[in-house]
Length: 481
Ligand code: 6PG
Image (cartoon, rainbow, N blue to C red; front, side, top):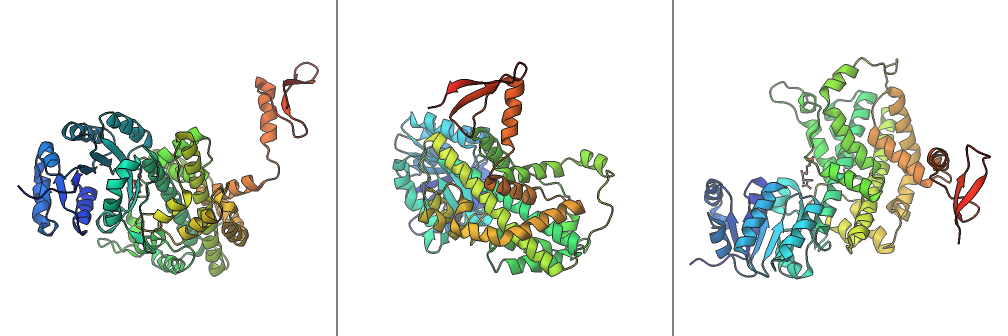
């Protein structure tokens, strides 16, 4: 009888097998593996003898190969496949054991599953795992939810495989039930915004200055040495530098310009709508992908008129600096909006989410890792109840420095007919938030006019309605206190 494993992985596609190999590479771990098709299990075991996997070809053997409390991480497709594996594990596991879903599950599914599994006495943990294939293998950022009891067993295992940023492992117990997947969803929403902003920056520079993708790669590589330093900026330089082997053209010019999406960005926006949180930068990023993927509409609209003159900036260098600053300011907005949604979600679902800790575990391993996250951690450390991230002193200063550039870029894009939905919506959000008076007062008037929806006044408490069709007299509906 071989020694029992302390951790198991179910689902051995790329993410699952890389995570299993990462686990096996850390001192003290022995890793059990199981996959629906046994060929994959055999293949992985043969390819990585160094991992010393404890391989099983049935879920019962897999359960028997784990020491107690049995702990297994599921790495299968979100949705029905995840439910199927959970059912199998629940049947084979015992009270006190731990089932971890490491996929990109919708957090409300995680809440439902946690509740159902908890009734059997088994712990269920939804854990967001970010970092793609490389991260899974060398150190991801991990966002686990679930019970404090499960975290006691799971914590040391996850700490052993997580990325390390400034000496600290990029994992923390985010909160109960679906909190981990909720925070991973927001991570992905911010990822969408960040990617769209970078894409807009590239497009503006290319069309405004005529620089080639390889030259723009140099711009991004330079930006990566400063306040924009991040994984996404770094890989953008690499993507732009890539030449297509077949045609010799820049690869970016050969790739079809229709962006895909697996759903987490859309979930972030759908949830934000339910929570009433304006995540406009993220929403525009999601919609920009949808627009790109409508070839028939785009074809039909291709001959609609745009600005007459062709556009070229006069001073390429200063324009590029403007774009850099616009990108930085818009990125601050995206994070600020993302954190607003975390706060709203935490209130709605009763999670005690420490925002500074979230920024900390995003510093390494994940797709949105960036130097910038240290500033967010500092902002929440200085004021845990910060009402909007962009009002923290550091970000206030950064936006003050950037705002003239930001405006110039949005104006230039609009007059040149270049779509910049994320840049411009972020600026509109910023101006909306800082406005002394908003035309929302007129909207309230309209609502009261056609639907007697009432309004409040600036000069006295209470709720009022105007008798628009009669004598235009105002009546008080509810007395102010
Ligand atoms: C991560 C990524 C990962 C995945 C995205 C891609 O954090 O490692 O976010 O989860 O690459 O879900 O999503 P789209 O296919 O929707 O762009």
